[in-house]
Image (tube, rainbow over all chains, first blue to last red; front, side, top):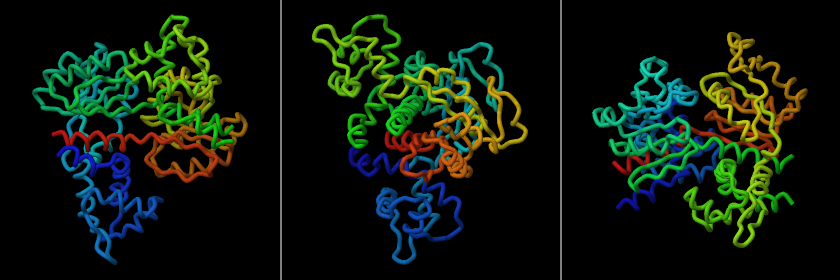
Length: 209
Length: 209
């Protein structure tokens, strides 16, 4: 069963769905054709059809997709139809940047509390978020039934934090640290590896120069 | 010629090279075996051998790799043997987070100046970086021969900034905006799409819950 579900959610398509959603949220038409979407986003029409097929919404000949229906279906695919409550751990530069980016709410993410181990930061406010000590992480995850943890600490503390959060009930971790996390099979980890991204840029550039 | 070079630099391996380099920088041994590296980083030994093969450094039987030689070769592959000067455009939350992350210098990236179009920010200092008006971008890129531009502005201004930078001589763009940039074939663009990453996390999570 799970394998089937995964089959209809290919990751490259999932990664592109926010692009479509962003576009659909901006237009005012009631219906739109795949070709128009393809042109606007500079994606091949056949790719657009394939990507949107995972939403199970089918366009009508000569009319295209119903915009409202398609938006809803994309949000459903992405799990953005309900806001996902999340805790953020690490109120450093990157943590603060994520807190400052208010638009995550449009993308289904609702950061509800921030944690740090630095006693000087605990109790202070950042962008309206009060900072809690990491010792309260386990208790608050259980009480608030939070399922997503965002780790923006140094890599050295990431595994321990992940263990704590998973034990308390977190099912998904957005990992901004360079650490490779060891987690049980049912836990979803999505890594944002800036240094890997930078290495692709500089190594390609080296070949150009 | 270029095709051959690209063949020996497969991107998944390139993305992992910083992991190896980070590990090698921390250890004090003179030589190390691929098996030990594999175990420490929780990567399959066969994968380690394949990844490190692109450096053209070969380990000796029973001795392993010379650590110093391997570090140098990885840095060379990544273009990190020389610091890459870069301009950062957009002194918002994300821009500031990148400026605050001093370790980019260990990864070959040297941010030399920061630009913003906000007149209130221009002339002020962030982490010791003076902020210049975007109008000076073209001139300073040419004068300082900067080859990398990092864009952390809103997506709506990204294409125009990319055009300006490329015209002035920039060859690589690290794009943190959601915009899809249209650039000439010889220009390298590496996108960091946080929203795409988030969509992978939430859609997988939806399948777990």
